Amino acid sequence: MMIPIPEQSLVLLLGPSGSGKSTLANAHFLPEDVLPGTGNETRLHEEVARRLARGTLTVIDGVPLSAESRRHYVTLAREHHVALVAVALDTPEALCLERNRTRTGAHASPKALRNQVQQLQNALKGLTKEGIRHVHVLTPETVGAVAFEHRPLPSRRHDEHGPFDIIGDIHGCFTELRSLLTELGFTVAPRADGSPGFDVATPAGRKVVFLGDLVDRGPGVTDVLRLVMGMVEAGTALCVPGNHEFKLLKKLRGKDVRVGRGLAMTLEQLEREPPGFSQAVADFIEARSPHYVLDDGRLVAAHAGLKAPMHGRDTPEVRDFALYGETTGEADAYGLPVRADWARDYQGQAMVVYGHTPVPESEWVNNTVCVDTGCVFGGKLTALRYPEREFVSVPAQHEYWASRSHAAP
Ligand code: ATP
Ligand code: MG
Image (cartoon, rainbow, N blue to C red; front, side):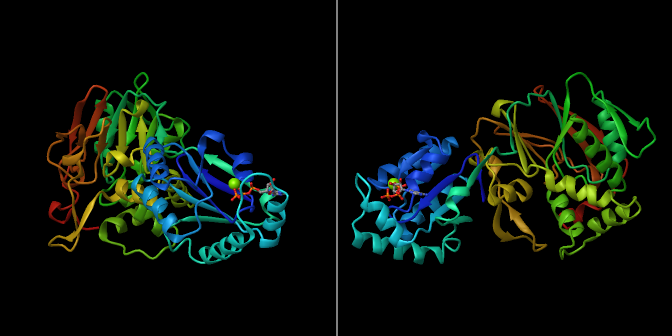
């Protein structure tokens, strides 16, 4: 049995006295990552909060077996956007009793033990309902074979120092993409071996970061996909997905999605491609990290932007924010969610570069900038050069999509 442990998790070890929590912690985690779950709760919660804010893996050995104790940890994990993993040791009472009898040091009395065993059984019925997404139950038969796989978070790419050319929402505007890349000093040519796709020669050391929404609405979706997928594969570009890629992925995976006109244009273009291409596109989208933290934490790239506490974190909430942005829960005249202005409140150290909502001109707001300048609506396609903080744009050749309906799918 393999239990994945994302880099910044909060891990709760649950089980009655003698079930083997400390033994497990000792065997699989570093001593500095393990905190005893008993003692002064307030102080413990403060320490856990400090650790989670830093993104340090934290294992609680022996969370008191009450729903209320667990609720504090659910709240802490939510506040700090880290994965919450519960590992429950479902060890029979008789075995715990037997182990505790031969044990030196403090442990529960037989009466307290019986109560704990009961509490664990009750807890096991509802841990996921309490908001603990990852629950693993170990028994004396399985505990010996368990392995914890420590997983680095894909978003943390501190080792990528650029320089970067960060390109906003392309939406199938291949002609403009090629012009922009040329303007930036890249050379785009059809593949030398005659296979579909492009050879892109990059100016010394530079890399492109694509901010997602490559697809839908524009005429050159498959060329854009081929170029971006080829550059990512060649290691000359990074790419985060946009909400349009996510919807396309769902559709390509056979899920039931409402197909608007923009997506229908993508699907029509994909149908003209050889078999296997759509599958490759779906695999490409699925493999993308929802955002990136680059250049030792100084630069964050996300389709719809990202609040500071979410940088380098990887939960469904963080992914949703990176893809769709913050919404107020209210609907506008089109019945679409009203977007809240996270950038106005941003106080983080990292520069955040994003797209998603078209703007007439890219403007700095608290070290954040939107580089979606509405190319598909007849605006322009923009790149931010990093670290130069210089904008380079090419005008759209056409208004491919009526801007009044820009918010429609
Ligand atoms: P407490 O809540 O009282 O701290 P605990 O769950 O941390 O209990 P441990 O201290 O890990 O329990 O284990 C209790 C005793 O059982 C120890 O003596 C330990 O060596 C033994 N033990 C733990 N796990 C196993 C195991 N998988 N196989 C055999 N013995 C075990
Ligand atoms: Mg213990």
